[in-house]
Amino acid sequence: MSKICQVTGKKAIVGNNVSHSKRRTKRKFYPNLFEKRYYIPEEKKWISLKISAAGIRLIDKKGLTSALKEAKKKGYIANY
Image 1 (cartoon, rainbow, N blue to C red):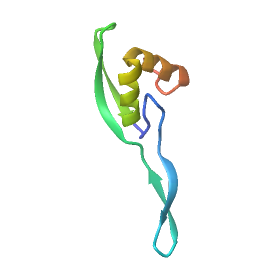
Image 2: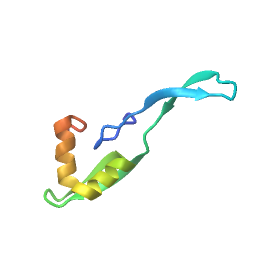
Image 3: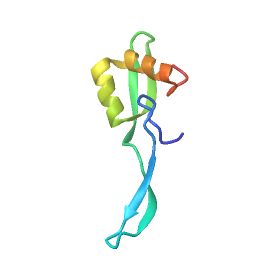
């Protein structure tokens, strides 16, 4: 699976490495992703998500079911 957060939709962006002499070479900035399991009490099952640190904070703030419904509506996850 690619390096994309399933809750926030964060993915790699492209930038430059800049040397002391100001030469530029392409590089990628990757999101801070974790493989984390959550328990959904309404469905009595565990789900595994590839989620960024910002996504973990969002789940702590809004709740798991609310965050997953919002992510499904935006098209970040398909199977919930």
